[in-house]
Image (tube, rainbow, N blue to C red; front, side):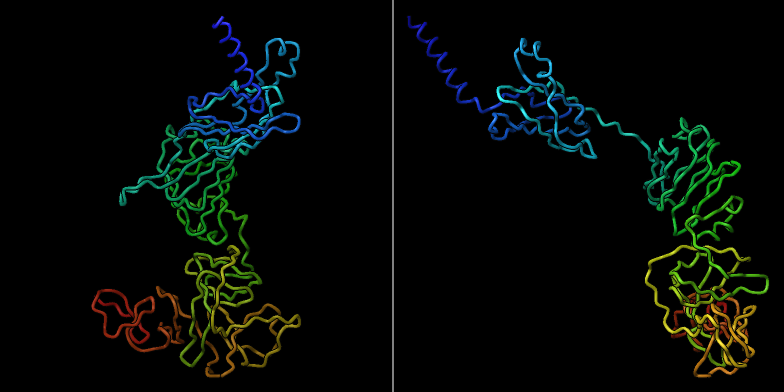
Length: 451
């Protein structure tokens, strides 16, 4: 009798516990899986008795999981499942996958009144790490340059990303060998500075290589570029002309789809200078030098170098040491540049500017000559001196030489720094006494070699 009474009381107790816990949903979930953990929390029951369950997914290091890798199904009696197959359909997980599937995240699902839930599947996958570093070891610093690659299958494009130099390759050593026939374009990141030997060997369907580095011409390894018919190299506008004159690149077809044409600039056999103005802010091409004329006197013209960019509507002198012809390109810029005093002017009137004999000077074959009486057309650039401190009929421009910064170019062909006496370095630094180290200096406007 006592045993029977105990069983009765046990049934009553279980019934009471079941009644008290009826608001809770039973979730069958292992806390730990191979590669991560799952945990659940429940919200308050709704009026219809349904409960929203939050599922927290936390991958271990080196593992990842997507929403599609998780299957949660209702827990119902087998006979109910067989008679109502729709009831047994998996719960819909609400929530977006993160971009990085290795991150912890949460999903929610709603359990109907009277049902529970069973996490039937939760598959964590090991993260596959692809060794795609092609940086070249820097022997001087003992570090590897951070250059990597990825093949964009959708666009048939090989992307070279990162900072620094790539290593050298052999025809049998290319990491993208399985896609050689599929590569039609190559895009090289702005931080990449060098292309190793044979890097694009075997890419027989390659038609365009786009280079983004605006700071320097890329160092080109031996046989890096295949001799494909019609292959073009698309370079930044400010380096366009330098690519045309750099050994190795000068044998290739160079274009610049992002460049801006520097119209009206011509360097021929008789001139190294030309005047230029644009209605846009422009970067100064790396093979050209830009100057404004800051003063004029009997001694000559004082030129101040403009660094980085030429502001819109600012007339300047351009100097070329080696380029000839009339096809020059650069790139637009948002850099804020000021040039200071500038005696160069540009005609903006549609009807031009009428001048008298000897009123202004204009450039011809590296000499500023007094103009004859007439009209300078719109866009014409001329030199004017309101103080009339200079009265010479012409002002020749000498060779730029190796100097930088502020220079004076005298009518007798000598080169001075600001028209001042004393000792100067080629970059314009003044010495209080004669320099003691060997080198080339400027003394009273004349180059001097100290041996």
